[in-house]
Image 1: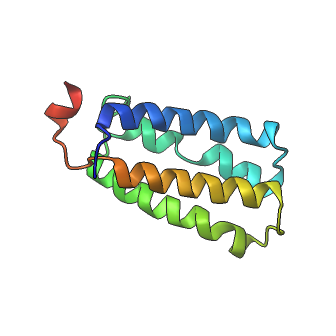
Image 2 (image 1 turned 90 degrees about the vertical axis):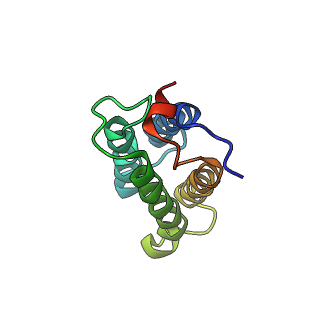
Length: 118
């Protein structure tokens, strides 16, 4: 069931960006886990053609494809990066990957841009 409009999705994206920016400081991520957190999601949100986008270069449907890939990648990241059991980085990236995939599953990516702007 796709119940999230592009506008609501954009607000959630901005919340995700805030969480990703604050996580390294608040939960003690350092090194590569911090760098990954800082670099994710902001550029995609700013470039997407939806109400929260600034430069509107990327179609909203493509934004959804990228989010699907990012959500799955974040779920796999702790295993491939060797984050230890119970580490803050492992818990954080598993939670963020799951949250991104839930939002992805609930978003109506095929709504037209005209509908998205309304």
